Image (cartoon, rainbow, N blue to C red; front, top):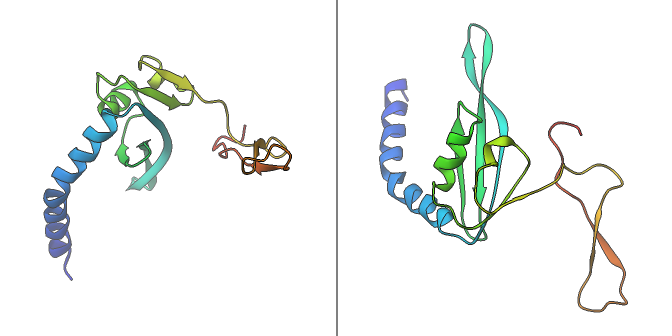
Length: 140
């Protein structure tokens, strides 16, 4: 398969997925509760160095939307959630989320020995189960 054929397939796929992706974005923007996060992402090389980007994710109970952007700024958070997001937003304390209405900050990631406890089943006499927290990518 030639590079030109791959490029053409990529373009056709992008066109075919444009409407469903926009529908997913609109669904996320209309939800009462969403969670958002971003993590560093590297793309290709320029001058022998990897080019840094950011993988953004917004997730709800039914739909998850991803975006790779060159920025980690508030503009990307607003693009993902829309200017009028009225729901409760679970997000870390990164400044890009500071102006989002309804933001509910999460604390740092999982560390050994810091498991949350949650009852198993409805019987209060049963032992708790360890539920690990999400690992921090910064080693905090």
